[in-house]
Image 1 (cartoon, rainbow, N blue to C red):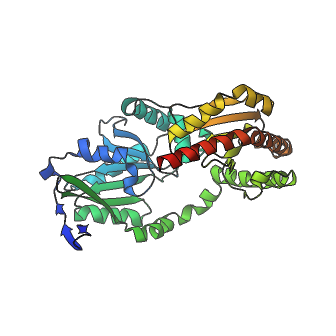
Image 2 (image 1 turned 135 degrees about the vertical axis):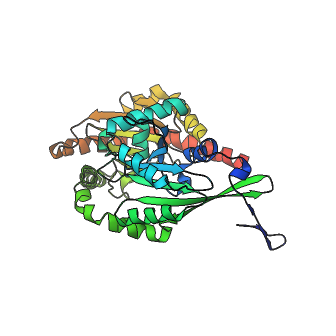
Image 3 (image 1 turned 180 degrees about the vertical axis):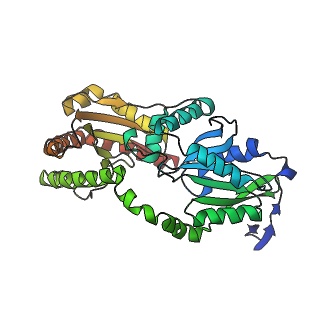
Length: 379
């Protein structure tokens, strides 16, 4: 690895090191780095436990346990300068142990992790947020035999790489990441590279290993709900266009449980929500800076009585101090998965998204001008 000196138009080599030379330890350093930045492994992962030892009749500990975006459990085994000979055997044991975990057990494990290492939090809410769903019932965790393994080390022995390649050929998802420390003066640089399978071959190998499961996946509950939502939004958008709801005129149907439209304030959309038990309309403050979301919310909350009088009903004001976002919500119970209820549900959404937009249009425009003036002053 090289540093580019642009002023001199020259390369200078970074000094490669061994973890042992730097007095770095597997549990205290590498494990902590990955627990706090799991996307260093090239994908979104949710760490749900570390040093997990919740196995029956054994006190063995796996390094990190994670979930991927498909709800699969991922066993992550870290080594430092040398992978050792037995890491694949260890990971296979741990993967077999966790293969029987139920959704309830996974939620409990994650809750214990949040309470012990993250200062608390709601495991169910965070799982739903990570998976991009509204209700825990929509999530299929730890399906079938789809558990995965990730191996991390500075150097891999031949017996380890040969075993991982054999596992891949049998449809078992396993990856090897080579992690190399470098020094740039006093600064420590870490290079993390996936070496098995190579990134170019990963999609092909995964596709081949999952081919036999295609029919099962097609009929999965989540896929059915995606289809249901798409059909609902098709019908809803047709009605909104007939009703002249301009903010949704150029919006296309989607598989999500929400459908967003611009409010005139960046990253603060109006949203319609379609769920199993209710319909909702809401104003979502989702800007990148939490302070801006709270400021917008507070400015509107100061006008709560006037805004609710204009809307015609009390709304639910959710500042959510522990979350970057804030919400202003109005909801109505419906049997959402009953198609016979859809006409009434769509009528309600059309009427109330128009009320919401009418209520907040002018206040948001004024607040947006204040935000822009502030940004110009800062510039």
